[in-house]
Length: 152
Image 1 (cartoon, rainbow, N blue to C red):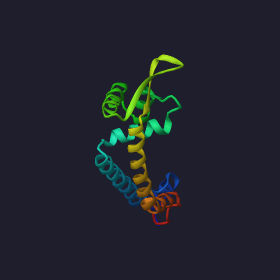
Image 2 (cartoon, rainbow, N blue to C red; image 1 turned 120 degrees about the vertical axis):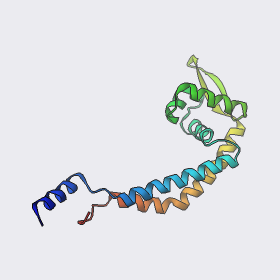
Image 3 (cartoon, helix red, strand yellow; image 1 turned 180 degrees about the horizontal axis):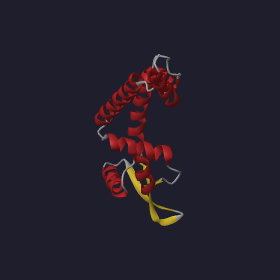
Image 4 (cartoon, rainbow, N blue to C red; image 1 turned 45 degrees about the vertical axis):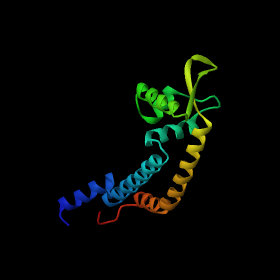
C-alpha cells in the first residue's frame, strides 16, 4: 500500500465511510411512505399538508388546542401559511378556533368530531403501512449504524 493510499484510508476511517447505497435506500423508503401518505390523504378528501396539520394538532395540542404559531413551527411554515391552512380546515369542518383561556389574544385550534374521525381513519392506514415497511426501514437504519467495512 502506498503512502497516499494509506493516508486516504486513514482520512476516510477518521471521518467515517459514507454508505451511499444505504442512504439512497433510506431516502427511497421515506419517499415511498410520503407518496403513500399523499395518496391516502387525497382519498380522504384532504391535502397532505392538511393531514399533517390535523395530526400535529391532535398529537401536540393541550386540552384547549394548539396555538397557530406552534402549528406553523411544527409544520415548518410561516405564520400566515398556517393561518390560511387553518382557514381551509375550518371551512371543511375539521377544526375549530377558540381563544386561549390564559391569553385571550392567542388563537387555539382543536379538532372537530369530523376532524377526529378523518384523522383516526388516516392514522390507522398509516400505522398499517409503517408496520409493513418497518422491518425494511429498521434494516436500513441498522446498516447505517454498523461500522464501515474495511474496503470502504
